[in-house]
Amino acid sequence: MFFKKKDRGIREAGWDRTLITGVVGMVYFAPVFWIILNAFKTRQDGLATPPKLFFTPSMDNFFNVFYRITDAGDHVATGMGLYFFNSIFAAGAGVLLALVIGTLAAYGFSRYPLRGNDTYLFVILTTRMLPPIVVIIPIFLMFRVTGLSGSYIGIILLYAMFNLAFSVWMMKSFFDELSTDVEDAARLDGINEIKVFFKICIPQLTAGLAATAVFALILTWNEFLFALLLTGNDTRTVPVAMARAMGGQLGVDYGLLSAIITLFLIPVFVVTYMLQNHLLRGVTFGTVKK
Amino acid sequence: MSNIISSALRGQFRQTNEVEKQQSTTQQTGKVQMNAFYKWLLDPKRRGALLVTPAVLLLFVMNIFPLMWSFGLSFFHFKASSMKPPRFAGFYYYEKVLADPVVWDRFQTTAAIVSLSVLTQLVIGSALALLFAKKFPLRREILMMILTPMMLSFVAVGVFFKLFYEPTFGIISQAYMYFSGETMTLLATKWGAIAGIVIADAWMWSPFVMLLVLAGLVSVPDYLYEAADVDRATPWERFKTVTFPYVKGLLLLAVLFRTIETFKLFDIVYIITAGGPGTSTETIAVYVYRMAFQFFKTSQSSALSYILLFVVIVLTNLYLYFVNQRNEGAS
Image 1 (cartoon, helix red, strand yellow):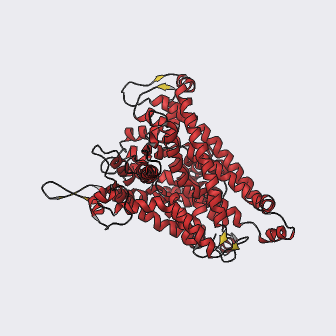
Image 2: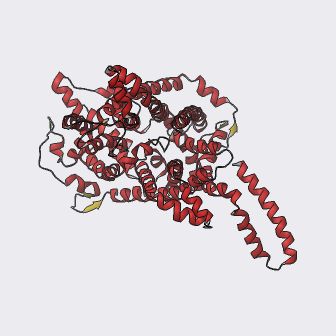
């Protein structure tokens, strides 16, 4: 939206503006850059005072993320690989479920408004706006009773719920923008409703669907509190593992932590770049489009 | 919810009556029953409800039902760590929570963090938006650097800043040391720790305010600027009469949205200060967490949760009111 050739009201500025914003951008980005730099430092370089800006990069930290060398010289997996898998798996499955259910619901809300449509939408949004700590207490108790605590099913269902409000609101905003003319024409031609949905609506919304999915994936990928309380040793996700590495007894290995964060950030960078045009809609749950 | 269920039951009843009639005339009862059921289910009148049902069901099971359960618990004496059966307590815990000076203290801490953080975000976000409201080479790439923090995990941001504030090795502490010659122990005092949290949160979320303000800025029609130039308006007048009306609504939405989000701030506080020093940066979310999962005061934390829930519902309602107002204005 910010990058269309003929933006209203957007005036031209030259390279001087590039220079100013470039410096501002670099200052703003510096914390992230510093962490990435840290990940490539050896322990000595990392703890040097004054801090070193130039050094010989080392991949040791990245190796240490996944393997630990015992006194006997064996390589032992640290479990971090599993945590990365858990993060991807739980987020992926949860988002997929939320997206399927959410898209159907959004289509319903947009095309066949119920009595009290706005009330339903409000309740759905509220479930997302609630402080997670409010939601987690009863769910914690419920999971303890049903034995879902620490299982994949539990965390996936939870993430599906977590993303449902977002999917519904995002997809509804996309459906609302879609002109109904084509659909109505198809209906007049006697095409059945299921085909209208799958062959006419969905193909027009692939970009929107992708944006919603990717956005939800990132939000879930970053999620901490639910994972902290409801995952076990085998289902722990990366943010929880990161927080635990922070609270280590033997002093924190900042190089290692930086390496974990750097790996953790890669999908975030890729996605932010891809999503730039949908970012505004995404961060406001589809309530602000332009 | 009750609408859907009751209409479903009514429809089902009507349908079974029909089926009973059909049973006398045909032998293929099972098949007819299924067909009738599908016909009932796929009736155009029910299409909206049908599409929405799975979503409502999931939300009910995973969110609304647990919330109602904890609402019930807040009226009983109950500890998640003990096996004793719950005993009825009435409004005891609500009275206890509302009369507790500690709770009000935590609300004040939260309010201080929310107001400082949202204000900082507003100033920085608006400034950034003004910078980016022009077209210039490499705009997309530079914007990317500004927008990234917003997409990071709270935990990662918390870890970053905890690292920067670290008294001996932290980059911010070292810079401070270089200029003042003293060791910086930012997180050792109450207001220092609050500043530490606010800086991290504002750094992360200023881009959000920027995005909204930017959307307002680029929506100002060019001819208004031209008209202002013709009228020889001063830059301030031009801002006041041309630019600001287009940004106003979005600015309000940004403030409300950020207030709701900062109100529930947990992860950053948990990582950077863990509520310390002492309990001086314990936000209300961290306090509920402690109460529920360290002291296992389940009923009391449920009661407090419900008070939070009420606050958030009011704020969300307000937010949606302004969203609707803006959408009506646009169309």
